[in-house]
Amino acid sequence: MKPAPFVYRDPATVAEALEALAEYGDEGKILAGGQSLVPLLNMRLAQPQALIDLNRIADLQYVEERSHNGAAGLAFGAMTRQTAVEEHAEPIPLLHEAISWVGHPQIRNRGTIGGSIAHADPAAELPLVFLTLNGAATMQSRSGERVVPAEEFFLFTCTPDVEPDEIVTDVWLPLPLPRTGQAFLEVARRHGDFALVAAAVSLTLDPNGMIADARIALGGTAPTPMRAVRAEASLKGLAPGEDAFDEAAHQAADATEPTGDIHADAEYRRDVAAALVHRALQTAHERVGVAA
Image 1 (cartoon, rainbow, N blue to C red):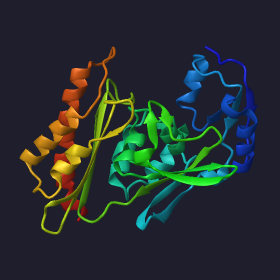
Image 2: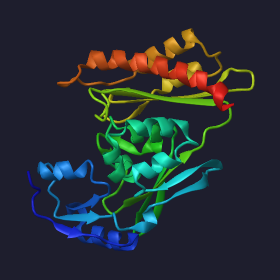
Image 3: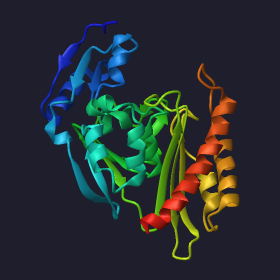
C-alpha cells in the first residue's frame, strides 16, 4: 500500500509550520509521530495535498515543571517522544502507569504526546490520562495562542478542539495532591493494541480519610474519552470501601455509550467498564497510603 501523492514540508520552527499550514489550509495535514497518520495515508483513508512534518522542530521537544491556574504540574512539548515522557512520568503516577500500555517500545520511540492527544482516539491511553487529570493543551496559530482544558478538548471521535490553522504545541498535566492514589487499567486483545475498554482513576482523601475528590474516566466506551461525572460525585464525602466503589463502578458503566464491533459487543464493554472502574478504585485507594 502506498499513499496518494502529496507535497512534503519539513519546517524547522513553529512559525514556518504555521506558514505552511496557512498556505494549504484544510488540505494540509500535520505529521507528529506518524504512528496513526501514516497507516491512514498508506490505506488512502487520508489524502492530504500537503504533509507538514513537525519532527525537525526542536523547540517542541521538552519536559519542564510549570504551574497552570495555580496548580503545579509538568509541561510537555507536543513533539516530546513518548519514551521521553515515560522517563519523566514518575511524578504523575497515572501517566507513568498508562504510558506503558501505549503500543510497544518501538512505537513509543516515534510516537509523541502531542500527536496522541491531538489524534483524540477514544480508545487511546494518553487522551484518557489527559482527560482524567483535566490537563490543558496549548494551541498556536499565526494570530496567537489559546489554552483549552481537557474537559473541553474532545469534541467527537478523533475530533479535538483544534482549528485548521492551529498546531498543538504544549500539553500540561497536574501533579497529584497529597493523599492521592491513581490507577490505570485496560483490557485489550493483545498488549500493544488499542484498548477494548480502559479505566483511569485518581482518588484524593482528606485528613480524616474520607474521599475529598474522585476522578474516573473511561476509554473505548463512547465516541470520545469520557469522564464518569455522576460516579465521581457519588464518592465525594464517603469513606472509601467496597460498597462505595461498587456503586460508583455501576454508575460509571451506566453512563457509557459503547458500540459493538468484531472485537466486543456493547454489553461486554459495559460489563468490563464496571469491573475495571471497581478494581482501579481499589488500587488507587491502596496507593493513597504509599503516596501520603
